[in-house]
Image (cartoon, rainbow, N blue to C red; front, side, top):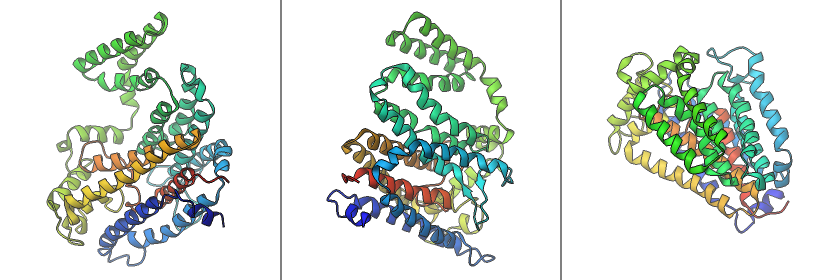
Length: 409
């Protein structure tokens, strides 16, 4: 009954339902092509699994629509605590591929709990920022949001899952800006990152120090704070070599391979090289559905999830990738538009956070496919195979619809 009332609203965003339906259909078509070449596993193929996951995903979507809007706001802090608990639980189980990303509940599949924690953290940030909008002009007001975002991020990094950890942090800056935080404070959040990245090149580090000093002078903080910010960042940059040594050898190789793929063409660079080969061989219109040689001869690894865009590029061509990205961009822009039109602060902030999560996944997945950034295990929304993110994508869409419709419940 509640769902019918919601759907009957004049401003119900039907376009979002059509968007996820079309994107999911494209994903199933590509996964069917991949699954046609699984002779040793005719039942539990990527296509079959995705069809199975589609059932709970739709259930979660409609369940989210039933939840009263005020309950999402009211219980966001409890959801955050629950999210922290579920990302810690995998550490008490057995590792999967030497990581603690998945929680085994005795089901035929494991659950990647960080995907759900990502959504809960965004809702918690929206709750806190909407409740403290008038305090956003003070520097102290951004400390707690940073703490909220960092808590699950640090836990996920130790699983280890650097890709998901990065996505967990991405909504922070857009949501702080949306809440009215001073741009100078947002610059201070990014400054340590740039200080560490540029420290490995003397000229770049010198140029960054000039920019840092100019911004501090322009912002006119107190003398003590100015000196602390400038020399603190310089000191942090000098510590970058020690931070590099804290990364695992695998993570270091990922970064080095990104900078020089030819360094290890049969090792850690293999994925990037095969992905570029698949996309390049597809040309403008592709080789045809089911005709991808890189895909079906198993040269392209993780083709059903992380590198599914490479399969699309090889079989359906650059035109199909462009259409897919334009369509996905339209979907994300609709969420941002609903954020602009939202009549309450919490909904507006939550929608911006969710749009940022979708955008981060699209950007990282696309960029790593063509070798613009190091390889990260991030799926493409609604397209890639995988249960946890597929279900949470439907959950986030349900939240977007619920917070977008002007329906009091």
